[in-house]
Amino acid sequence: MMWQTLILSQWQALLAYLPAETVIKHRQADYYQGLGEAETSSNCSAFIEFLLEAIQQNLQEAIANQASESEKTRVKTPTSPNPFVCYFNL
Image (cartoon, helix red, strand yellow):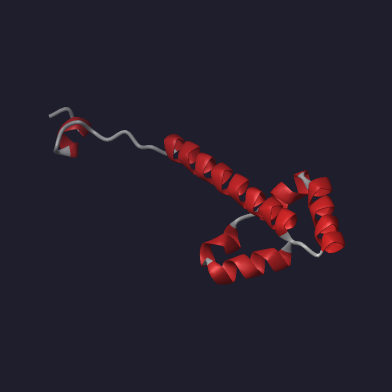
């Protein structure tokens, strides 16, 4: 999958950090089936669709993980405009 990551990262630099290998590892049979069909038929459409679906799945998971992480790290801010008033009970 390294060559796909290289090509995609040249198109959009952010995609260099997308771990598409993980998704493909979980769907390895589909990966090789799509690759085989592309070679047999001399048509890469099914294989490209597979890769795009894997990228989409990865992006959706990354967005969901980022949202859940930002919920975990959310800091409660004081309601008073002056934080010292809240901290020292002034």
